[in-house]
Image (tube, rainbow, N blue to C red):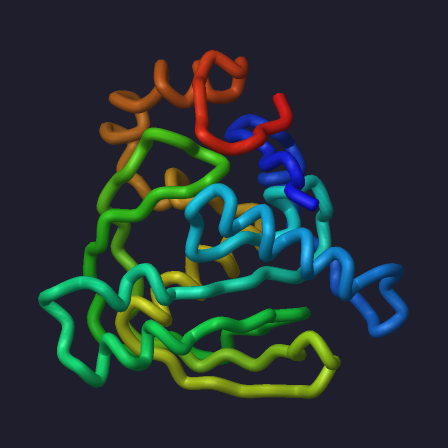
Length: 189
């Protein structure tokens, strides 16, 4: 079932999400619905707070990035096969240089801006079967994970922008929060 995405301005998006245990009701159904919602909106990631649940779960599928012609064959292969569920994740370490990349967000439609993030991270999490995992990620995979992780912390990509950039976007952001926007996917205003 495709679920509505919450827009910029909804207080759930600015709240730190709570951990989930393996007794969470209908978790498999929730994950199935999150995948359907993300794919219907042409996203590469979706965090539970974006669908109104203040819990520490996000999903990622970076395969759309694998078609970028500037990528090496190895990078393309890594992106095409990176599809994961992250439950109760914790970023253990951030490494490398800060690098800018143009980001967007399903909760902030029609706005894309360069955001600076670390190029490498180490993250621990539980998968959909509540098996403990740990990954070291670089490049776009690390970036997408950091973006979705921020959602669990109540942080939006616009929070990383300069105050000057935020002032420029203020009217657009206000229009999103008031529902004065059209999207190709379901939103809950």
